[in-house]
Length: 217
Image (tube, rainbow, N blue to C red; front, side, top):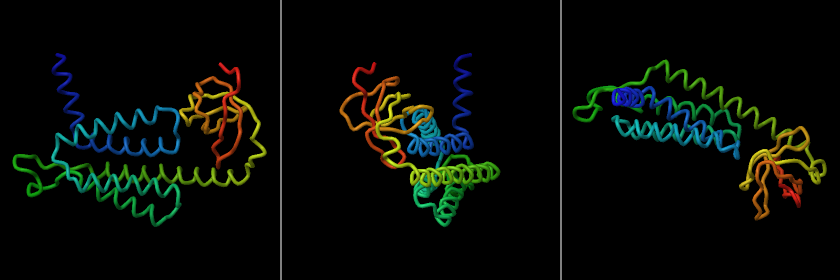
């Protein structure tokens, strides 16, 4: 019974559509973790999804060019969060679509000897592309708002304020200052654990630079 369950699970994980979804979730979660560091949850999800996707890809006649194009699309989407270019967004979307189409062989002539021709659902490709555009569109909008907010927050407004670390700062994490949650880092070679009291000593964009208070637990 246990062997049958494992075999059924493995059959699901090596399904081309499932592999594709795991690869996309892993890459997009990794991109999110790049901009929301410190929690560890996004990083863990990205690693698990990417490992499962790679395991599945090794069992199927995947096209290296397709994989490369999907990775390139992920990089372009992340870069677009910095440059906010519509042209770059379109290039990333095209790379994603082409990578998705080429990810698995779609005809007998493209398959290794003895391999079965594979194809992804066109509806799945269309859905992933639209969701990706919406996801990164929201992210770009959020980054733009953050940059505008950064212009309004001065160092004098936050330096000297005290709060508590909501995650460990190693060296980056999050802190709560009064009712506000901030991304923060420490330049001190001192561990800051979740729950420790901290004081803001500088402002770097929208990221606080904090030091642990003497006597904090």
